[in-house]
Image (cartoon, rainbow, N blue to C red):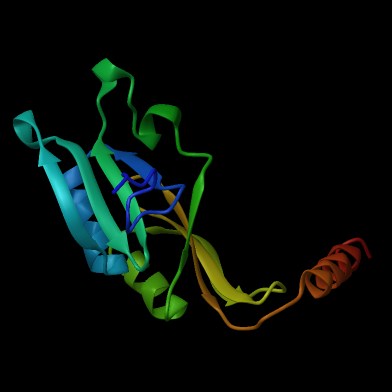
Length: 156
């Protein structure tokens, strides 16, 4: 039997979050997103060399910041230009839970032209998350039509 290039339970692309307080971040993601911790490699002083969290059918990897290895959390860069997107059963509930647990509201939850109900937060560790529940199946053509209408309405 040959070894698979992508292990079972993983996708070709995984998010790998770097945070200043990995232990606290892992607990926050468990509380807010309901993640399940699959593994954690704990290093000296309680640092986390690597952890894996199951979110739905995806694995998010996470580690502590290691400046001596040039591995930095968002604070080093004055924020992160990357946003994680996560589909949830109930975006409104999870959005409020995130805010109550210390996240910063970036965009309130509302229905979107592309068929999702979504909002955006920044977690206490500097990572942006687009939280969504899919509420309508929309063809690419209809999304473009709605987008064009939205853009032209903004130019009036």
